[in-house]
Amino acid sequence: MDNGQVKTTLKDIFGQYVAGLYNGRQAAEAIDDILDGIKGLVYKNTRCLSVDDGHERYSLNIAGLNKKQIRRVETDLVPVMHILRMQRGLGHGTEAHLGKGCSTKHHKGGFDYLVNRVAMQYGM
Image 1 (cartoon, rainbow, N blue to C red):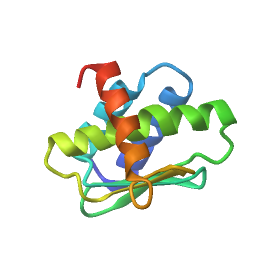
Image 2: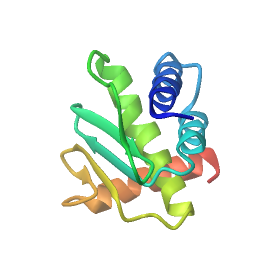
Image 3: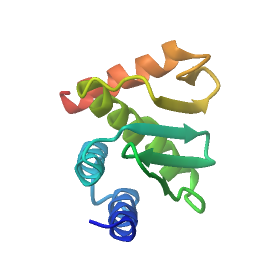
């Protein structure tokens, strides 16, 4: 699959997730499959969400999402993508800043709590 096809497919998967057609696990697994493994993950508090395959970084457009959709991305999709990375032994390389008290840098306890809650929810 060429770069343009990957971008289009990721955009479609993310759009279906935002529309509620996929849950976080389904969307994250589909994204993981397209990239042959999510090698990097960056989420910066309502500004950007990007994933990379080790060669290219792909942005998933969160601009224009309402507060409920953004909250769902933060509390569902980002943690599941992190869990998939951990299962592949790629825990380092996730950068997530979800807000006060929850990030991978300064508030790791809050992020770990969220990841554990989501892991139990999806049985991962």
